Every structure is written in C-alpha cells, then in structure tokens.
Image (cartoon, rainbow, N blue to C red; front, side, top):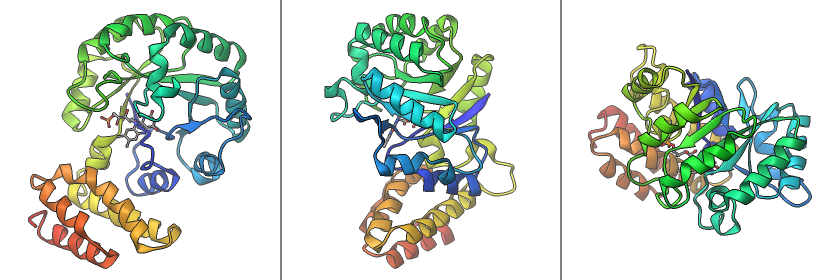
Length: 309
Ligand SMILES: Cc1cc2nc3c(=O)[nH]c(=O)nc-3n(C[C@H](O)[C@H](O)[C@H](O)COP(=O)(O)O)c2cc1C
C-alpha cells in the first residue's frame, strides 16, 4: 500500500514538503494544495512556484486543480504536462464557503449531470492522467452511488475518497460503510482518506482492504510526523521536535519578520498539540508567545519536560 501526504492549503506548501521529505520521508506522493484556474489557464505566480519541479526536488508531487471550467482545466493541465507532470488531480472535496458557492470543489457534487459533462470533456481532451479526490456527497452519503457511477465511466487514474459529506466538513466520524461500497464497485484504484492517525489505523485498512492502492494522510502526519515509517531508532517525540525545529529554521530564511514565522509555527502546533494529553495547555502557551525567542523557550520547556508544561 502506498502512503500519500494529503494536500492542506496554507500548510503543506513546497517548503513544508521539502523539509518533511528531508527530515522524515517515507511518502510515496505529496499532493499539492489546490491550484485555481483562471480563464487564461495561466496560474498565479505563487501557485505556479509552489508546484515548480525545481521547488519539489527528489519526491513525487501530484498537482491538484480546482475548477468547473473544462477548457481552463485542459489549459492548466497542459502547463503541468510541460512542467513534467504525468498526473493531475481534480479537487471535488473542498468544503470552503468561498469555493462551494461557485460550484467548485465539493460544490460540484451538487450538480452531478454538469460534473459528468465536465469529466467527459476533460477525459476526452487531456493527455495527462487524471485522478480525482472526492467527498462522498454534498448533503448525504446516499449521493455516493450516483457519483461513483459517473466516475466509473472514465479512466480515472486513482479515486481518493474523503469519507465525509460537504456538510460535515471535517467533523464527526467517517462513513466507513461508503468505502466498503466503493471497494466493491469502483473501477478505479482507490485511495482511502479521513482520520488515519495511527499505525493501528493503517494496519486495519491493510487487513480490511487487501487490494487498497493507497492511503492519504493529512492531520495524522501533522500530529505525529512519520508515524508510519518509524524505524524505532528515534522516538516519536524527538522526531517531531526535529521536524518542527527545521520548519522554523526554514521559515526564518524565507519569511521576513518574526511575527509571520511565529504565525506559521503556531499553525503547525495547532495540529501537533493533539499528540500530547495536555495538548490544549501546551497550545495555549504557544499561542500566547509574542516573539520567536519566547516561542523557542516554550518549545525547550516542552522538550525538556517531555510535554509536562
Ligand atoms: C487546513 C486544511 C486545508 C486543506 N486543503 C486542501 C486542499 O487544498 N486540497 C484538498 O484536496 N484537500 C484539502 N484539505 C483536506 C485534506 O487533504 C484531507 O482530505 C483532510 O484533512 C482529511 O484527511 P485527514 O483526516 O488525514 O487529515 C484540507 C484540509 C485542511 C484541514
């Protein structure tokens, strides 16, 4: 089974991926946070730079597109092909209130006939392989069989399923029964996504779905970086601390101003805190840090007291 790093907009940018790959590794492919298309098909400079192969050396990156416009998808995927990519991922899962009203991301699931026509056009006209990342429905999991029927008509490279509806955002437990349905009915190879956070979670998936192609993990890797690839040489905590220290160093080199670096580190700790029993207390301290030196002092306390802060 392959392990993918989920795309998390604002978090898993190129700098994050390079650092994660250097310090932790063990990832078969990283997905880029979504790139939105413009009518011209030209990407924004920042988004283009994030997926530029030179900024993602030594590991596999799959760029992701967010659009409802088939021509823009085709145009953008051509740019990606020119950059050397052989696969592009279509985002049908973003639940954001700024994306969904435009009918994009999970919003596209609300109009299955339109989605079908869009897929027909892009699969007809794109040479690049297309994979899909979808939710199981907009309002209800009952929408999934119809969606899968649509996906099954096309040569989807891989279908990643985040086992929640749009209405559920990231709340509540995942709809495992929908994955069982997909496992027996999907023509495309499947990738499981949602709440995989421990080695036991991964082992259970391997046992339950022996033909499963891949698992995509997001928050689990932010809470406990590299939990699947632990060689036993380094403790979970030490590994995570090294990673966070390296992220801080890297951000200091590219972001001017302590405040912005601090903001980025607080964002990472908002996930990492869940590795500690007293995570809320730890995060409260980190959130209150007003300078990088204050932040580093708190990290030092966490390390030296093994989280007893
Ligand atoms: C802050 C944040 C940003 C995200 N950005 C993206 C994105 O750009 N593209 C995407 O397909 N999914 C995005 N997701 C969803 C994740 O890729 C993933 O599907 C979700 O976190 C569930 O997996 P997990 O339980 O392993 O974290 C985002 C999630 C979060 C919390």
